[in-house]
Image (cartoon, rainbow, N blue to C red; front, side, top):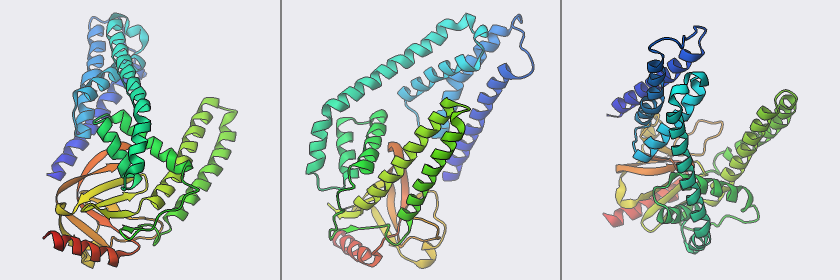
Length: 349
């Protein structure tokens, strides 16, 4: 079943790239299109339908999810993209269609802006709720957001960015709390050292490339500067999120996170069995297994794999959701974790 889904996704992506490239080459190839042709308007109309209907459907098939709102956004984006792919002189008969796409996109942008105002209005109350929660901040903040703004992707993305900036700049004077029900997952690795090395490399690259490109292309050098600054902030936030959010056992649940990259809540009743066999742990994990392993230069294996009764949802970077059947974990104190976990599961059984 998984292989079939992957094949469908790969086929959809291939067709998507084929449709985009063929429509681009149609108007930007060395072969000239004669606008006096009787079928010329039909050719342009076909390209518009490709970009506003076929491409969105293929994109949704590739992503394996569908929603009408998402489809409308992609349709409007496709109409706007048609304006840049198809030369303006060929679109004289389709101006109304182009303006329709721009109008729909403008309405959606206004709607998203209204959500931002609602977020700003509710933010003080949300922060107060987070501060009174005993859960890790990554989880408590996410719960409050989902309670106030369920199924609002733009809000999820913005709140993910807020968490990144908070950990990058707001936690350096604080110290992580060591509690009996928490387990760190990074101290047996050099992950933080590795990330600090990346930050140094990005800083050096930023100074060198920005100076080199500034005299040739101010816009390109500015874009690269912004991207590099964002990368530095992300790595700083990821380091602090890793330190301040250890694995926690509470409320008959396991709260797992690996920096800002991924997090997951697992109820004890969702665990089918614990896999601790060395031969199994050293095998390559499947795509249905999510890893909470601090990796650096060395090849490491999980200490334990939790096999779940049914797929459980995990939250990845930017609020992306994925479901997994197994969870591979590597901890700094695996024996104590296994002991507590076995006790909890035995009590439930």
